[in-house]
Image (cartoon, rainbow, N blue to C red; front, side, top):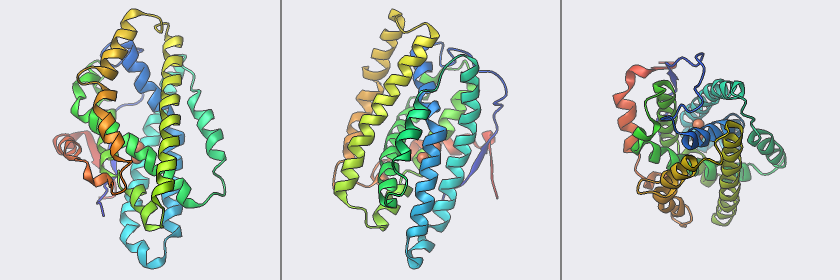
Length: 272
Ligand SMILES: [Fe+2]
Ligand SMILES: [Fe+2]
């Protein structure tokens, strides 16, 4: 069981977002903006999965999860809220969110499905966010210092993703979710997640007029496949999920604890 605290981030989301807020880099800004576009709809689905999964537990198992589920819902609801404000600025920049309606349509197909399927999808997505989060916390300098507010937002979100990475997974298992379906959802989520990220990033770059610039592709190559590259560094932790005996807690989350301890002045604890 994990102790999950809900934090209200003390950042001003009223001020507009600069086009290339991430270190002046068009590719990185477009990639993170794309991810942000997926959060409001995605995180609502994760909240619903975890809430319904909790309700489906037999009474004697609920106590063990009660506080953790509340913390999970509180954290994801706060992420949703801030990323919605973030996305409203992106809209003003002329960026169009194609990911959200596509995800919404796809998730509609899940209506009425066994809650373990919902949790299988959520656990797979949470694995993605957790490995991305840990990578980001280890490479925080790549967020640049042009917009310290957004850098803080991403690092706070990453820290909490790392903190609650086991919740959906544990519920899936507590409800008797099996390995085969966990694998099936993981493969599908991988295809959708990578495909959607790529499509939305390209759309953002096209809108921005930077898709066909040499500097964009150079940045993409180094940011994804370079020595500290996202794909290069997260491939192994991604693959760990395929192991039958995998559990999210096997991955280190000390970077998250360190960031939260060193940045207490950036948030207020809710309900404490
Ligand atoms: Fe989140
Ligand atoms: Fe999450």
